[in-house]
Image (cartoon, rainbow, N blue to C red; front, side, top):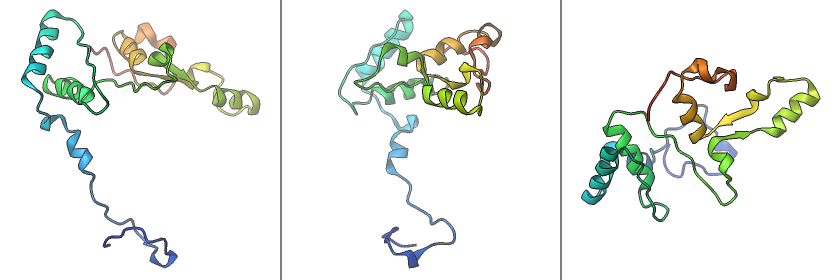
Length: 154
C-alpha cells in the first residue's frame, strides 16, 4: 500500500495488515550504536571500580537512559530496570503499584483472584530487590504469574 496509509475511507479496507514503515527511533535505542562522550566513559568506569552508583542528571532526552542500556549491553547484563517518574510519583511507586480497582471489582463480583498479591505490580526497585534474593526467600511476596528467573545481580 502506498502513502497515505490511512485515508478515512471505508472502501479502502484491507483484508490483511499493510506493511508499515519501521520507526527510525527503534534504531536510535539500539545500545550497539550509542557513542558516549569519553568523559562519560571515564565516569562510568570510576563508578564501577569504586563499586558505587553513578548519579546522572540532565534534561529529558539527554541520553541518561541510553547510557544505562549501553553499559548493561556492553558488559553482558540484561537491560536495566527502568522507572519513569512523574510529578505525582511517590517513593512507594519505585517499589510497586497496587491495582485497587481490579481488587475491588474481584471482591464485589467474585471474579478473579482472592489473593491480594495478584493485584500487585512490582516496579524497578521492587524487582531489583526480589531478583537479588533467592526465589524461595521471596516466594511469599510474589503474585502467581510472577517469573523470578533466579538470582541476578544488575
